[in-house]
Length: 93
Image 1 (cartoon, rainbow, N blue to C red):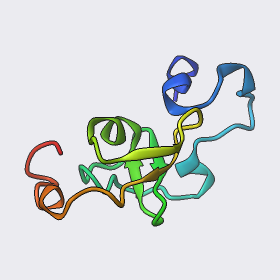
Image 2: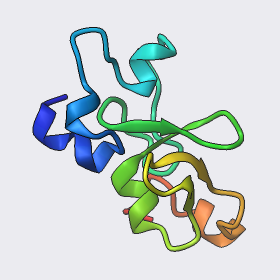
Image 3: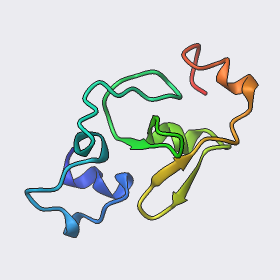
Image 4: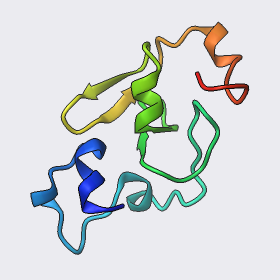
């Protein structure tokens, strides 16, 4: 992940050093996929129920919310209605 995109990820660029790694890499979750769009890779954060979600997907879904808005984690997806979950993978939530 480039230093320019870290603000969107929830980390201040001045806090990044050679040993910093994203949440997915820190968790060794190499095959993690977004529970909202089913795509792998990218800027993923952990949800409150132990799944992974892209930052942009969490922003795009009105019922998803960041418990810590500054750090963009964890992501609470518990308010997403059942009807919306049926759309996962069909189009974009």
